Image (cartoon, rainbow, N blue to C red):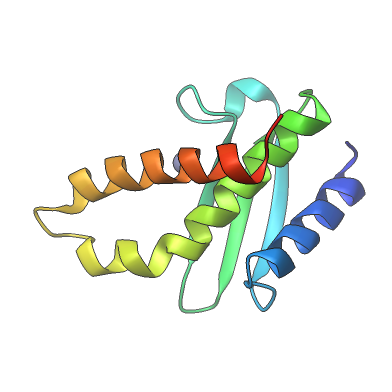
Length: 111
Ligand SMILES: [Zn+2]
């Protein structure tokens, strides 16, 4: 997908997830530039309702959509993260959130 198509998908999924009022920007990078074994990451500024999704290029449209929706669901859940951030429960919460996001994505984006 070219960037304009990716941005259109982001907008559609934002509406579907009821975060249409967020400003979400997309950064396309070479696959090796994305952290760990993931193909995408998200950086969230909750106060400004802004997020930047970094996506690895050169993957199938379906894979890109899965990554986009995955990161947008992290945006949806971010207020919950803020409740535990910095606490003893933060790491356990992060692992549980990641599992929950993957389950939700399997249901939202069946391939
Ligand atoms: Zn994730």
